Length: 349
Image (cartoon, rainbow, N blue to C red; front, top):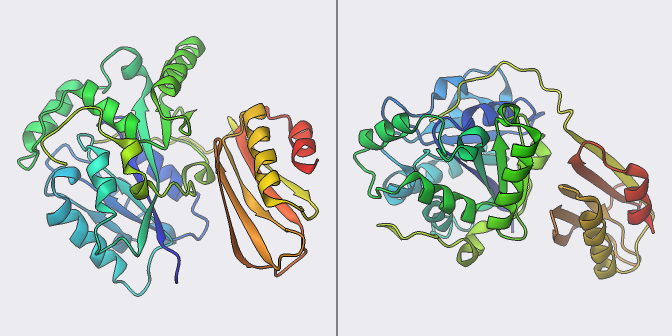
């Protein structure tokens, strides 16, 4: 059976920087074809033109689909499912789908929609990213301009939940696989650390909290989380009950992801996949590694053992036969300052 197309859901209030984060992501696509579904509506929605015409094959205009009939979580059947069906019916299917929700959207109904029979066999939710405005959240406002959010709410005739920002925020955090604290350049180090600690406490154990100043994060940190969120909806339950089961300006900053680093660890075959997975998990915990991915050569097995780790959660599966040296290669991604020597030794032991 062909593998499912991964989809990443990006949530966050109006002005949190979702469009900027996605624009930065596209600039790192390196040939990977990414389709965008943008939940724009009214006069205050996402400016799709920011993402169109970037001159790269990763973001052709026909790969950018705008949902302008209202909040995506309230128009799943009428708007989102038909749009997904049209996208999936194309002969040149995308490598990855990124869905930018309205700032008022509840992510849980959208995640559940991936279990609809029309799309469940073709797409999986790779991960839910909750982008928050670090400055506004620290000050208890959650959104940079609450008045603009209220205006957005009034402009959406289809909106069927009148949820306070604090409750929407809680629901976005409850559903997230990764929380991105944006605009940390407006915070002191103590404020940023306190906010990250608070968010870590409130979120599920496997959720990672990362920081960003201008939505600039490595693409390999954001995509490829393999969360299969649609199969895990009970763990992402809405904290607040609702009636049914935007964005930051384009920033012109150069991409110098100095706050993050990655390197490759190569080692010979492994003997015991289960023991090796435990070894990897312990290394991640000890060195606070954000992402770890790659493949391993298992003694006596002709197929590669693919390995994906997001925080302490590790997924392994045999993907295909080796077409090169039988060796284990792992990409380690984390905050700048990783102890490469110690990590290499721990993974090579």
